[in-house]
Image 1 (cartoon, rainbow, N blue to C red):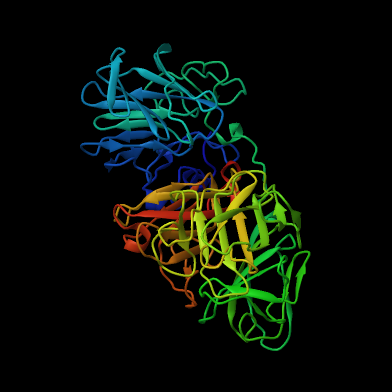
Image 2 (cartoon, helix red, strand yellow):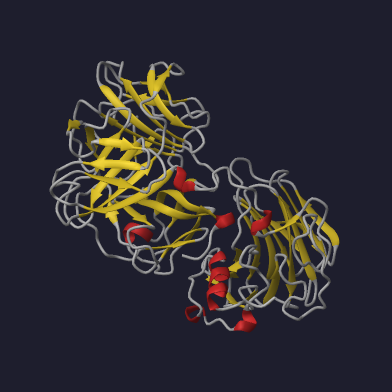
Length: 565
């Protein structure tokens, strides 16, 4: 099958995390592999090297060749569940050439001299592989096994996988020589073999050898259906220009929001957070410590397809451009008695989001539990005192227990115990902890919290390590992001916001900062891709070498359905 035109080829390229421009990738029609615009197979990802040097890629990103010592290449699909099979044709007869199965924190590598290496240590010799050998990898994320085959003969099964979150399947890591991968699109390996035409049990793919029973080709048709097929039913971004004289309805969200976060784009105005639990006439500002205030014109109603703004100069000034990020919960909320403190909870369990209002009880350092209504442990909890001045406390799953960030400041993560507030443990499937911290659990004082849980294909809350290069890390989310916040957690740095609506294309993803009232700033820091985002700056605040950064991201489209942006 040939591609109909360059646009179709560009669609396929974006599935590998690459930019959607034919000429920028130096592509020729002969390089294009046999994907279709409705079923895309994994390739090697040229923008996601696993340390060291990136390998050189050709043959539609299916051939990887050494670029010197320690050149690596990884697949564009990452396995979070299910069982998948791929083949790699070795084109090297000597050197430190390894085929790798990567399970998050556990790495299996089979070198060309036969050594099976787990996390850098050899566990024995299992026969060598050389030029012309086809190495099969069968990775079962659910059973936590990886199997290595040589020319269709099983040579090793790895079962000693790390506990905890094991989410990533990466298949190839050469440090010299070259190899060609087949994730189901070409059993001839770009003409180096005679195609055999074997398919998986779903009738997908073109493999040299028949995949083991139960293992599938790594293609979008074989990815599980996401629980949220259309993320815009739960999160959406709104853009509008103020009219400066009367109220106006902002429509097109596709749902009635329960939380709306507003920011003027072309002028310095505070960030306004308004939700259905506190009431539409109440707002708090993420760039200050100020207590909740009342205004009847910022938002006058939450509507079935958006919201209405009133006559004011903050988010409806004449000619002023504005953005609002919106989440769907469940209206004004219901009583929840799961924790020590009875709370009012508005929960959207499908999308892993809840708004929680509660009153503090403590008169000294310590903590109490508060129900969040999600049924799974949230990865992010953002809390703020309402009727007193106090900082925004931001808990994130990537931070150590008891540690937190402050949404209204640039400060690095801190420890709640060290500031004398008491411990701040990780949330559970039913409760989070309210400590005596910046007024968040003080007797008689009211508080609000926003809880977010990971939902595969819709939301992701993780971390990455900067490399200090304009060719920065690629962060796999499993969806094309609609919204990304990045914050350096290991030292000071602002909260940088990018979304897919304000400019709508890579190369001009303007930023806003949650901790500052500044106008939108034109600076290219990230590329938004079909399966995640990539840092394209060496700025220390986004990509400082060795620095740790946390992020929160929401989807525009699950990877199964994503196309080029």
